[in-house]
Length: 261
Image 1: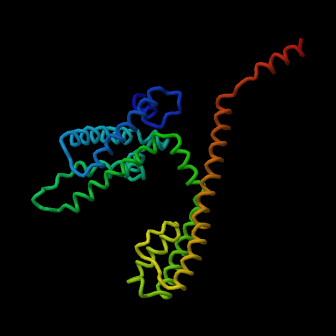
Image 2: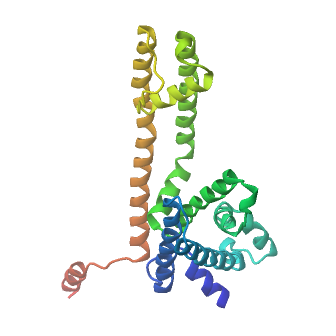
Image 3: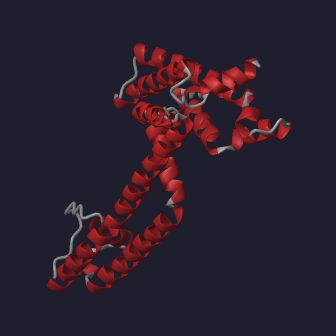
C-alpha cells in the first residue's frame, strides 16, 4: 500500500490530491533551479551546491518511479521494472542526471567533453513535462496529430532538399558546398533570412522569392494542425471533467418538484 501511495503522489496531480500537487510544484521548482547555473559560463560554489542538491533529488525521484513501475504499467510483473529504465521519460531522467555524476580530470584538457556533458543537463527541462497538465495536453496533441505532422515534416524536408539543389545549380559561386545550400533553404523556409549566405544574381533572387512564399505556406500548416488539435483536446478534457463531476442544476430540480407536486 505504501508503494501505491508513493505512485499516486509522484504521478501528475489531478488537482484532488494535495500531496501530489505539492510534489509536482516542488519538482518544477527544483528543475528550474537546476537550470539556472547553465545560464552562466563560470561555475562557483553556490552553483555547485545547487546542482548537487538538485541531482540528489532527481536520483531520489528516479528511484521512486522505478520501484513503482508495476503500478505505472498496471502489471504486477518483474518485467515492469525492466521496462521502466528504457522508457523515454526514464532515459531523459537518466541522461539529465549522469552529467553531474561525471568527474573529469581538468589535466586531461577535454573541455569539449565537459561542455557536452554540461549541455546535456539542459534535458532536465523535459522532466517538467510530467508535472504540467498543459504540457501533458500538448503531448496528447502531438501524439494524435502524428500522421499529419509527419506528412508536413516530410514535405518540408523535400522542399529544403529541392530548393538546395536548385539554388546550388543556379548560383554555384555563392554557395561553397551543398550544406550551405541546405542552410540557405532552411533559413528561407522559416523566412528568417540571416543574410550571411544569399544569392546575388537575378535568377537566384527569383528562386529565393518563390522559396520564401512557399516556405510561409509550409510553416503555417503545422501551426494550424497543432492549434486545432489543442482546442479539440481542451474540449475533450472539459467533457471528461463534466462526466467525472456532474453538476446538478438546482433550478431544474425545483421546477421538477413543483410539477410533481
